[in-house]
Image 1 (spheres, rainbow, N blue to C red):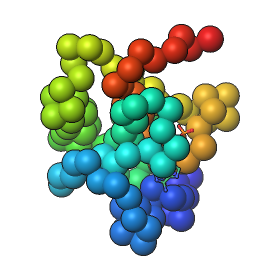
Image 2: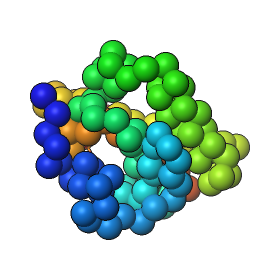
Image 3: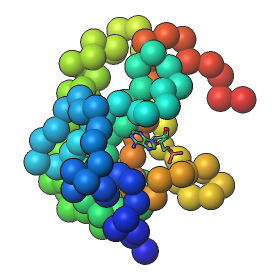
Length: 116
Ligand code: AMP
């Protein structure tokens, strides 16, 4: 069940501010408030979905395609493809998800440590 009062829903409704990096009809990208790398951007679809699976199962193909193409567009804008980057999406309790609106972390700008 989607919590309409989660912090990213509030950012989408402009009830709280964010440091916007990119926005279009289907998605919003903004800087993580607690960056774990020199570049740490959060990508969220403008669609009420709790996690990756909820988004893939319930959004239509136009929204899904547009969202992932926007991720690549921002990767291009940030000019991080050559040096590399890491995409992460946490889901649920075991995945360590804190904010229950699907998001992708884009980490880059320095060597990202190993996962374990
Ligand atoms: P996750 O653990 O994958 O749910 O990640 C949630 C992320 O949201 C964390 O990296 C937080 O630092 C980030 N975050 C929480 N509140 C805000 C906010 N108001 N603006 C930007 N990032 C936030």
